[in-house]
Image (tube, rainbow, N blue to C red; front, side, top):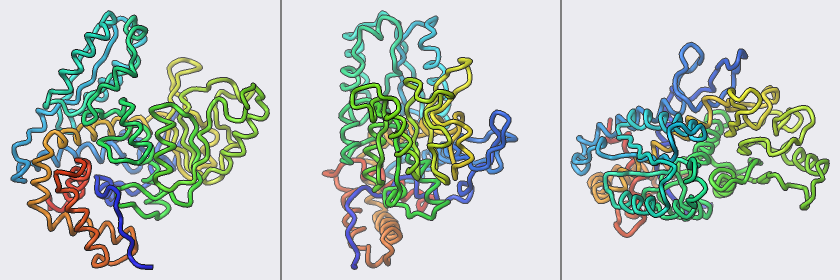
Length: 447
C-alpha cells in the first residue's frame, strides 16, 4: 500500500522529550516504606529516592526555559520577552477559609513551576463577597490583556461566592486562546471532537502523555506525528466521567485509536437501581480486560467492596496492565493521599503512577507548558514569520516525522510535509499548527 497523506496536527514537544536518553527509563522509587521499581514518574528529582532522576516535569520545564532564552537568536522572535507573559490564576475565598487552603497550596506549586519555565506567575485574589458582575468585568479586562498568556479560575470558589456565582457560566466567558486549563465548555467540546483547538484539559492530556511514555519506551509503539503514542490495539479503561477529566480523557483516547472500555461511573451496571452485585460484576469484567487503566474517580463514591475503600482491587487488574491513577482523595487519617487503585494491585502491573509524584506534577507541567504556548499564541505573527524564515527546516522535520510513523521514506512523505508546512505558516490556518511546528523544529534551531 502506498504512502497515505496525514492531515492532523503535527509537531509539539513530545518528539524531543521521548528521544532524550535521560527520559528512557522506568523509575525505581521507594514510597511509604516500600520499594517500587516500575514507576511512571511525573515529578522531578526526589533526592536519594530515584534510580533514574529525570521525571516528566524535570525534563520539560528546564527545556522551556532554554527555548525562551534562545528566542534572542531567532530574528522573528527576538522581541518576545517571556518574563512579560503572565500565567494568571484567580483565587476566590477568604484567607481563613479552610475550604480554599488546598487551592492556595496548589497555586503556590503552579507559581513556582511557572517562573522556572521563564514566564511570570500572577495571582488575583478576591474575597468570598465578590459578585458575579464584578468577576465578569474583571474577566473582560483579562481577556483583552495581551500580557496574559493564559488564565484560570481556581475552583471551587470559597464562601458565599461559591454558592452565588455560576462557575460554568463564568468560565465559558474565558477567551479560547487563553483557556489554558480547559475550563470553557467550548474547549472541552473541541477536544472531545478532535477539532482544531488551542489547548487540551491539563489532567487528561498529562495522563495520555504519561501513558505514551510507557508505550513508546517499553512497548516500542510508534509515536504519532502529533507527539502521542498510538493506542491502537490497546484495550483502555477509564474510571470516572467528570467534565474536566474522565469524559475528555475517554474522548481523547478514542481519537488516538484506543479500544475504549467504559467510562465506568457510579451508575454503571445498575440500570438505575442499586443492585451492587451486578454493578461489581460488570466493573470486574471490564477492568480485568484492560491493558491500561486510567483511574479518575477522585474518591470512592460509595463502598463497592466490603473490605476496602479503594475502587480497584487486585482481582480487578489484568496481569501486566499499565495503571495511570489521577485520583487523590484524603480519606482515613485526612492527611495521606489515596488513589483509586489499591496499592496491593501494583504487583500485577507492568508499571504505574504513585499517588504522589505521578499525575499531579504532569498536570502542573502541562498547565505551565500551555502558558508557554499561550505566549506564542499572543505573538502568532512572529511565530509564523520564524517558520517562514526556516521553512526548509520545517519541511525536513515534518518529512522525518511522517516517514517514521508511516514506515516510509522521507521522499514518500515530502509532498505531504510541504503541504503541512504551508498550513503552519498560513495566516488562514488555526494558530495551533504554527505553534506545534515551532516546537518541533526548536531542537534543530538550537544545534
